[in-house]
Length: 287
Image 1: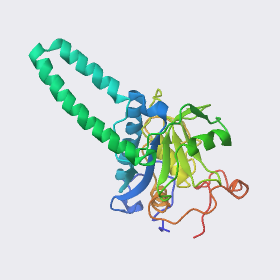
Image 2: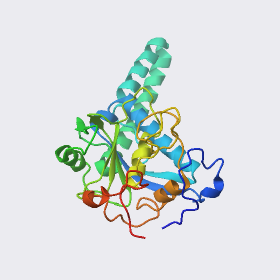
Image 3: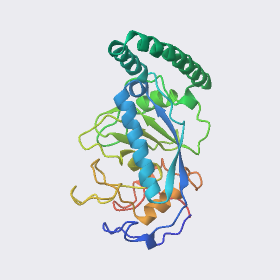
C-alpha cells in the first residue's frame, strides 16, 4: 500500500498549496463500469446530468493526478431520437421545399447509419451498452441500509459483471433521502448508485463522493458548517466540495479499482462499527 506522505486533516490543505503532501500518480485510471436505468437513459435531461457527474468525477481525479477510466464509451440513447425528429420537422417547416428535400435525403442516409450503429450496439448486449431495462427507484433511507430486495432487483438487471476490477456505477432513481448510495454488502463487491436528478445545489462531487466510500473513505469534516466545508467526503451534498487530502487520494489509488488488491472485509458490520467516529476509513485493510 502507498505510504502516506503526510497524514493530516487540515481543512486549509490541498494540492494547490501543499503539493508536498501528494504523490504524482501520472494520470492512473480509476476503473468504473457505468450503467443507466431505463428511466435515466430515456430522459434527455437525466442522461445529460449523469454525464455532468461523470465529467465532474474525472475533473476532480485529474486534479489529483488520477483519471476516470470508464466503460462503456458514450453511446447515444433512444431518448435523443424524439429530439432529433422534432428538430428535423422544425427545419423542414422553415426551409424551402427544395432545401427540405435535400435535407430529407441526407436525413435518410443519416438514419441508415444510425440504424446500423444501433444494431451494432444492440448486438453487443446490455452489459457493454450500459443501458438497462430496470425502471423505477431504489429505496434508500436517510439513515441505515437500503432494503436488500430493491438492490437485488437492480443488480440483477446488470447481468454478468465481466471485469470485477471495475467499480460498478449505476445511475438510477433513489427515493427516501440521499442522492447517492454505496452498497457495502457481502453479496457483492462495493458498488455505487447515483441519482442524476438535478437538485438545488447540483454538486458535481456527488459521484466521486460515493466512489470514495467504495474505496473505503469515510465521512470527514462532519462537525463543519456548510459554509466552511471543503472536503469531498463531507456528509452533505453541497456545492464547493473540491478538496481531497493526500492520504485520501492515496487510498483511492490503492483501491481495487485502481492499483490495489481486492478488498477483504467491507461488509463486516460487527468489526467495522467498532472503528472510532473520526476514523478515516469505513473498514480496515491489512497492511
